[in-house]
Length: 348
Image (cartoon, rainbow, N blue to C red; front, side):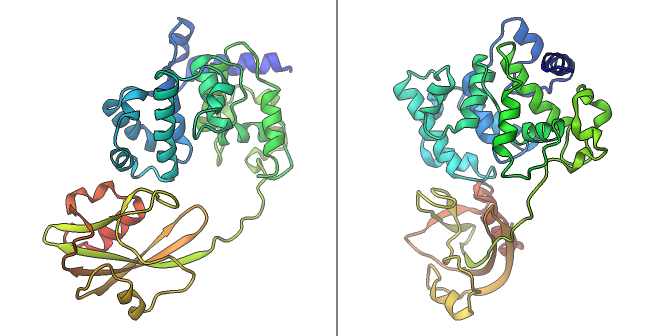
């Protein structure tokens, strides 16, 4: 079987099975001349970099209802956008989101560049996002390779090299299948196949339109691809989170603009370090003079390390903290929302 056969079979499958997504122009509408909004494509791709489609959709709908254009997003206050992003994680992406929106509004008249090269000049757009927006929004024949596409390529060609070292080979294999015909639909067809059929576990090979081409299936164990290198243990850190209440209000701080969770509202914390904090150390690092008491701890995992936060709580006051009603804590990043729920369990 040839590449044209594979492409024809996968695109025919996509025409019948494309996912209905709020940022997507489906294959029938696309064939009729409807084109995707680059802003919506770009926003969805940024959101989906580190989360799943079901988790991203509510955020996408809220963002586009509140900021329907890239210029509207560009004009918003940083804190409002960061608060709306809470729960999507990787907050550097939210800062890059604003930087990109403002660059499009200021330097491009609110219109996204329509080529991969032009998109790469925007802040925060790496090779994948630029390729995805170019293909899906502008029908450019770019090579769009996410985790789903890597998995499809690894199985299709039974690639023995393990990830992450196999990434260049998988990208090259995907690039060999790109054509000028329906490039946006092709990119989304590969993504949909990986997300719904060629799944990480228990792939639904009986539903796959391109099994005749799949070397991984021919081995009898397609789920063994892509090969993966042995995992390395993430380092573990310890910190203290402080829950200072003033009646119905909880004290927060704004984290520094750069670094982990940069620019986000957060509970006051100590430094995060390899060793556990003693009670004396925790009290010495507290953000206010109050009758602090330990109220448990929470565990949280980040990409590169895991964290134990010891929780200390007190009633008090401090002029240099940001006071917010307890009902407003849902906008906190997940690690601090988890800590607040645990430390204020009798109040929330």
